[in-house]
Length: 366
Image (cartoon, rainbow, N blue to C red):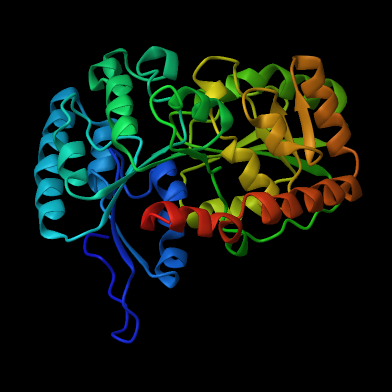
């Protein structure tokens, strides 16, 4: 991260890109929407420097520090990013959501000056604040006005789903739908077996862990009244709820922990409340489970049904949740069949290989 990677002198890059966001390098959106594409883009002659606002330490302090420490981190990170942008020649600026935590457009103006601008959105970030599950002061970032400013000036806008694209089309006619992607080659396939314990899994972040509450009642009922064997809930990346009749295991997220979890999970969970914010989400949890050959039970919100298809159970109430868990827990053969469908769907429709030419074209202006 920092300087643009250097290609051998026998191969000159066609396009140099600065990729930035008001996030850290391991923040899910930044990692998924551009970080995992870096090597593939390089092989196409597009040299990407990952320059998120925060480094990993600053991300942790901002997430858990006092208000005063957060302000200090933001100011320090902004000074550093300004120096890094000024020091790097680039043809294109890739802005994931927006570049700054402050309400000004200074960083957005700086990174896009005299460069092609590509805006990428995978969430309805114009809905800052409590409706998005964030801090009440989140609206001070002026997310809507920033998105509009960037969209109106962008040479290309990448939207994670149709709902986001529709909203952005009010400001620009240069929108392309590019879903969130999975590096399929990096995800091992779950080998399903009938066993005494059925393992339910949820992988996410602290900011989305609250959505687990949507499924708690159904999971408890399934464990206590339906499933004759033991039930485990494996939670990676957020606070795990305490559930009657369920053995709960909580792990802090890392790429290694995520991969370890995917080879243990029998059924992937993606509960979501139906709100204006969640309807803009790109169903990445489902994509990840499916890439690992894990069938999904997910709430029918936003892009979910289009993503999951016939690779799991898309539900809309507690009883349907229980029925989905009952169905998928009953047979390893069924989980294997649905898991295979899901992985094929990811390879064909949501893989890096499928979408890399489109993203490369947006970054290079083709």
